[in-house]
Image (cartoon, rainbow, N blue to C red; front, side):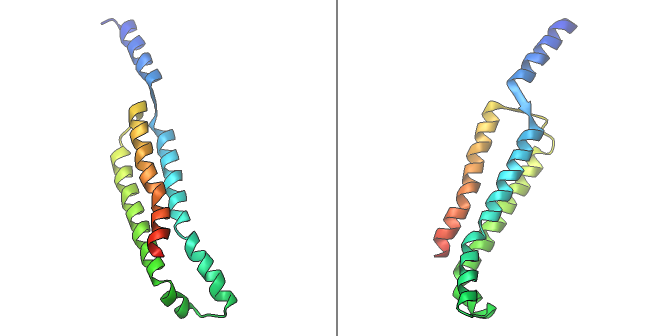
Length: 121
């Protein structure tokens, strides 16, 4: 293959793939938002406890199930993200197929705050 042919093939491959840096930034943002959403159901209880003049110990005891669910889900998402970060550390370009697989993986992470809120009840 000539240099021009190799260059044309490389350019065509570049058009079929995407920068991994943008994908990594998007993935990091989605994971961070999912981790943040985990705390929202607990915040409702804090407001209610403050309005009822309950102390922190009473609140913790009353929301023990939610707290355990929160911590467990937070750790699971953190482990998923760390493994993903390790896998993608050397990736420079991603295909459309890999992006769709990653979106399915993100769907499982985005679902965790819902599952956490349900299991905490």
